[in-house]
Length: 420
Ligand code: ATP
Ligand code: MG
Image: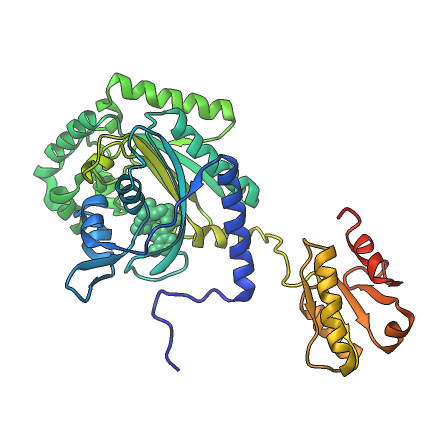
């Protein structure tokens, strides 16, 4: 047998049910904020990510799946959604003289070291807002995250970190000060940080190396460089979070590596997934649309890592709907086709109920075992006796006190789902 590629997982029926629950729940929350869906290609010109994610990032330097198209173009499987989203809206004239609030969902691809919570094909749902200078929309995006965790019942595992990078000018001034501080002592930095000093110095703040972190304690601090206007933007954000009852921690070493990030950055993090702590990352990227060749357009967004959200839902023992709600057992070959008809009638009367018809024969005892294994709540028995009397046996599989009742077809819906 040929095996799956490393880091690319199959999501099999049992897990897929949980995935469906997670995706549906998050998309319903996002829809309640009236964000609209965009569906974007998995393949883009490599140049889009080189410019949109940044040459000096891990993603572009070493994580992309890049291939040559048959005509020689360099294409890459998308490692993230924001660049494609900006490209699509700009290319289709949707950023011109208007605002947009959109979301996207689907697989992303990065060549990383696979481990729990980190895969080479992973899944994100992201939301982006264009044309709003904020901070109101920054807050809305954070509120969407909070509403998602609440709807999924995983708020207890997740906390919010926020920071402000200030305007592009204040950020640049900080970067220069950081480089000036670190350059004379660069030999003491870890290898990655030495490289970043030249390519992407603010990312050094992210370093996990204890020695580098020690050196950073006396480095210039970002908050000291932030201009008054940016401070006001950030204070408004924090106040609104207080008003909404959303708890946060201001983390001044939370940065995004790229020059087009400004003002608000945030991350929803968890301590319950080992070193894969980031569940959702977002921020304001006012410089990106222009960087990609469009007009200056303020923009802010986030991306949720679904693989990690699913792991948290497993921790929370999220209740997931079973494959079938109702299982029809039929006895005797000539009744099988009547079983199909009965299943159709029930699906029509109970639109919210999934109905599975037994196939492959066997006596009722064997069929009921299957019904039980399917996770169904109800079983309906349809044999010669039922065919003759016109009444079906309806059995609750999970609550013995409800037991078994004889009912006509038109009484079943009321019995099973009194409110439907
Ligand atoms: P990390 O620090 O964990 O590598 P990142 O900064 O590279 O994350 P982003 O590019 O901001 O991540 O993507 C947003 C979210 O997507 C992350 O917070 C995480 O939940 C998820 N994510 C990123 N890479 C992976 C991956 N390889 N496997 C699973 N989820 C991922
Ligand atoms: Mg990463």
